[in-house]
Structure formats: structure tokens, C-alpha cells
Length: 375
Image (tube, rainbow, N blue to C red; front, side, top):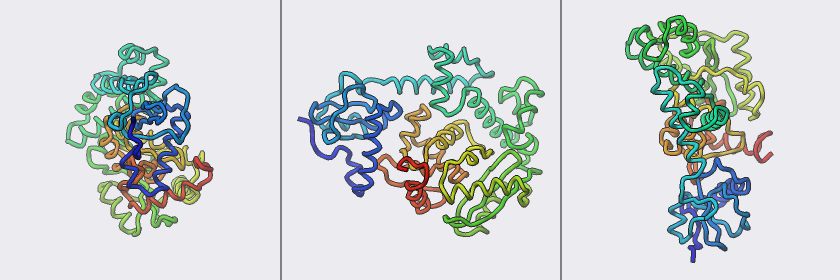
């Protein structure tokens, strides 16, 4: 007889409201047979004694007969047996698709030249169209955009270590100087020479204001917003910006920047996924992996919380939970890249660059914001 004790030990230590919130989201995934949730948790049915994936095609059990488990092994230890329809003891389609995308990423990262879409699709045994759609669904960007992000990261690493521009160009996979200089400023946010010299000659416009979360600093290059930071002391926020861009020229905002800043503060004040916010250009620099995580973060709707493991699933790398957490911690764009919507598996809050109390306040306010999942 399966164990009828609480299904997830992590949830027993949570306040009742938090545990109910986590289970409500899980039940929603089950009723929608959401394959994206596969691997992030499992559910067991008391009346049948089986454990299933969230996407199981079987007829839904009554809610009062369903228990949730963080892992398949936990359900087994409680006495449940694997469902014969969704086969949770075997590798599911979501896992296979995630592995295919992860393999394609490795091919892109190690290739001297970007393989064609047809070549990548053939390597993972898919059609060109299906592979392109699947890759974008998992990574949030196309294979070509992923290759560009990886190439940009290689450029940064090489130039930061003193490699000549020419050597960095060829090592990053550029075959001609013409193609390199046509795209290098877009990849780096500045010319290769300026990047190699630590941002010397780069102009960064910035402004400091107040919002309900405290002091806010917004900074931007000519390509887009490069920092949104929160704090108690506006002077300290400016010092942090100076430390980060030690050799850049920090100047006041022009009309375009003032419009960007007003949009940012407006989003924070009213918590809306406005079209204007989505259109704001971001000049964020990070590894190809970090770019994947940040893209996936921007797709999380207001009022929704996901775990680090769920986020890892969404980018097709379910084993990279620690790396996902590190990418969230490296984010320097508060709210517009909403890393505050990522929580621990048990629903509790983890660290936040701008303070856990701000993270808690953001989540509480978003739960009642226009356009949230509960609105």
C-alpha cells in the first residue's frame, strides 16, 4: 500500500499558504498535461498506486487523490509503481528533446564555422523546421542567435586576456576582417579596440531616481540598457557603476535615454508587461549560457514563479541547475530580466542581488498586478 504521508518533505516545512501555492501550480501543470514540467516534479495517485509525469495522457484523477513528489525515486520509496502509459522510469520525450538541443549547442560551440540549419537538424535526426522550432522553444533564441552569443563571449574572453584583435577574430570563427568589423561592435557593445582597453572611450548615459523599491539607477550604451540596479543609497549605486565601467565616460542622459528610464520606472511602479517594456533594447553581456538563461527569464509572465530546476528544463539543460542559479545571480538588469521570479523547488525565496526583501516585495506586488496569472 503506498505511503499516504505528505508527498514532499520540503513542503512540510513551508507555511501552509506557500505549500498550497506550489501545489496549485503543479496541479495546473498536470491538468494541462504540460510537458515542460516533466522532470521538475512527479505526481502519484492514491487510488491506483501509480506515479506519473505531469504530461501523462491518462485520465485525470480527483485532486484529493493526488500527491506531489520532487523526484521519481521519492515516489518509489513511498510505495508507488511507474505508470505504464507515461513511463516515468524511462527517458521521456522532453528529456530526449532537451538532450538533442544540448548536443546541437555543443556542436555550435566547437565548430569553426556555424553549421547550417540542415546539418544541425540532420545530426539530431529531425527535420529542419522541427529542429528550428524546438531549439527556439528550449533556448529562447534561434541557433544562429545562439552562435552569435557564443562567438561574442569568445571575443570577450580573448580580448580581455590581451590577445590581439586579429587573433581574437580568427579564434572566434570569423573568416574575414570585413565580416568581423561589420558585426563586432554589435557583439561587444563597443569596438574591439575599446573593449580590449577596458572600455576606454565608451560613453555610458545614466540616471538615478526613486521608486517604491528605493533608489534606482539606469545606465545605457548607445546600443541599449546595460544596467538597472536597486539600493538604499543612490551614491553607492553610482560608485558601483563606476567600478564596473572603470574606463568608460559616464555622462547624463539625452532625450532618448530619458524616455528609456521613464519606461523602466513605469514598469517597476505598475508591474505591467507593456509593449514599450518589451521593446526596450538591452545591451547585456555574458556567456552564451547566461544569455540563454536571461532570454528564458524574460519569457516568465508576471505573477508566475518557477524553480531553478524548472528554468534549467526550459533551456534544455536539466542538469545545469547550479549554472542556472549562477546566471541568475550574474544578472545586472533588475525587473526587466526578472530573476526575482525564480525560487527554490519548495517555493521559498533564495538570494537576490538587490536584497531578498525586495524580491519578496516584488513577488507580492506582482501577484495582484494587472496582467498577472491571477488577474
